[in-house]
Length: 450
Image (cartoon, rainbow, N blue to C red; front, side):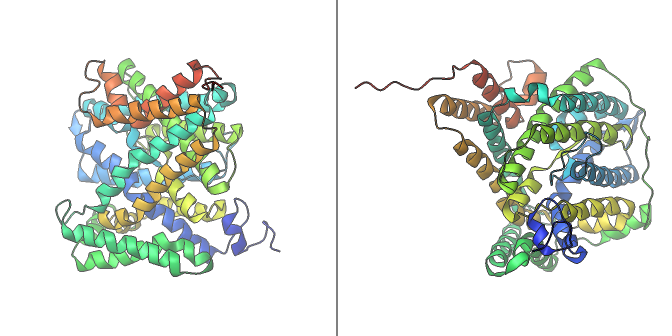
């Protein structure tokens, strides 16, 4: 029997050990393709409204920031996989730029990009310290609360998968061409997963992306001119531009970022818990919770202060990929991180990956996103179906998700509260579930009369 210390394909379903490099690269590439568009999109949106010292960002400025966001995502993933001191969980978690911070970043960057950088540095350091002290407060987040949060994460990204499924840069949203390409991609993933044998079965996402990409080319959805434009602006190899934005500090913006970092911490706990229960088949440890939050915070401070990009966090779609494939080997996922770093150092790589149409990506991600919701349901099912737990689940999901579905539901509250809870169901579900878990009596069972 192969040892974890030997190079063996048997290790691909194990956290430790090495697998042949030729096999590790495509599995790592799957993770990059699953998150690439979502990783760079927040930065592109922020750059479109940003100004620094009164000057709006040029296309070259944006291209350089895209380069930096790929590099920091790769660095963050490497630290998550292979911890430095107590920073990092050692779990197969992929890191990338978070949509959770989009509203706060746009508000700050539209005033001055330095204000955004300052808010990220302070907020990130606070979350990092919170992670290092997790053993003192983690027990207040009971398993039923974590299950509700994971369910909310799954629900919150279902619309992202469907939005990609029906979109492309060539045709209108919902056009039959988009739907056809997305459906062909989805069917290709399923058929490959059913018919393939052995380890190849778990490359169904990469196969679906390849088939969908070829079909998308036939429909004129792929614009190869963007690759040439990127090379002309940045060259074939480019050193990342660091410390380009001096941090500026505003107490109101800092407070708003700190609050969102707390929400991000909840999402990270949910993602890492789902990775353990859904892919590794065990509960998460205090050390892993602490390390994952420390990476979330300190690497976000590094992302803002050094690379000038928005905060990074764990990627739910990659957790879904872990759950679907059960490929959890750290050595394998390391190649995904290295590909992201190379994509930043060699702009043509990132430019090529960015030509992947949304509908092709959506055809693959709808399965992965749904698996996050399933992981949350599984976590809840492992808790007892007591009266107390059912009240926590029902109330937190209804209130947390419901307020995001009704426009103006929180309009009577301060704008900072509305900004956080009206657009982020994970935050609402967590707060309601946590409060109920703390205040409801332990024994609420209805006594049956004889």
